[in-house]
Image 1 (cartoon, rainbow, N blue to C red):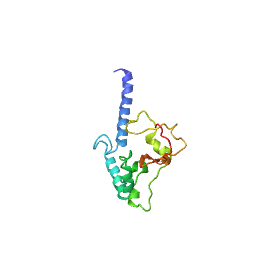
Image 2: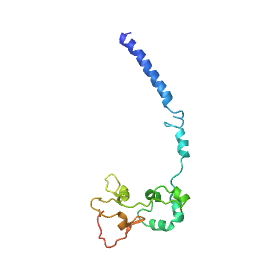
Image 3: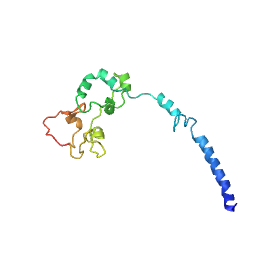
Image 4: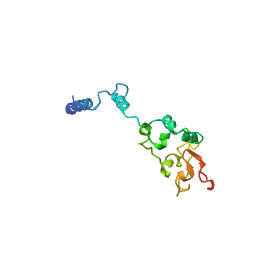
Length: 158
């Protein structure tokens, strides 16, 4: 056996031993129980508090908003897409308020022009040329966006 191999073989055995030792201490006990991830993560996620109430809870009290929303472009969106998690509000409606977003930034998360988005599904606007000094809700009702509040405003290409 060449002398180089005699010197490298113990280093290789030490390296493999250190690797196996590190693997023993670093890989969780439940890894691989249900697949290529920690099995305990399922129990941990199931124990987390639910934050989203769902559209059904919102409609119980806000059926007027749902009726308005059901006739326009945002009809399939859950209320919590814009207003955020609502479970706390559903549990305590008198003491917990939901977010009521305003300003351009929130609407533009979905509606700013982006070639990667399907333009047939999501109406996109050119941010630099579409009423840059106004908030979206000054002209659009967020629950019924095509029902313009300001009818004096001439139409514009989106």
